[in-house]
Length: 193
Image (cartoon, rainbow, N blue to C red; front, side, top):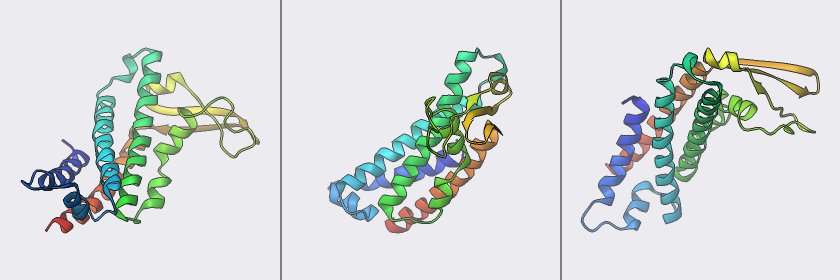
């Protein structure tokens, strides 16, 4: 279990402790988290489930020997792990919004792994028509080497290349996610005591 998993578990256990009290109600959970309503509470819980699920995908990706996989599996793996990081970004933004946390939000929104996800694995061929966003085409050989690398031909200045190590993109995101989960954990645990 890594630090992200530990923090998620710690936060979820603290919420579960309140939930499992003998005469616990939804209002107790709302008060515990100091959120405005039951809908906010459920959004937070759903977001923690999403964080747990996407952690499983990221762990699995880190165990793959990319050099031995077929091209089709490489696309599934890369699309999947990049989208998992995006889903984590969205989940942590929801949690922070519901808890009234504004620290690090701009940094979370600008995280590099999501920018690469948007460019390489969340685009359609018409992305960039009349906009400053452009679709990029994966280099299959680079994926075998653990790289998100490719080009865009629909940029106003011509062909544009991008390249990053997938492990570095994920590692940088993990550091930011830990930082934010520590902030959330201290806030929730302080509320509990």
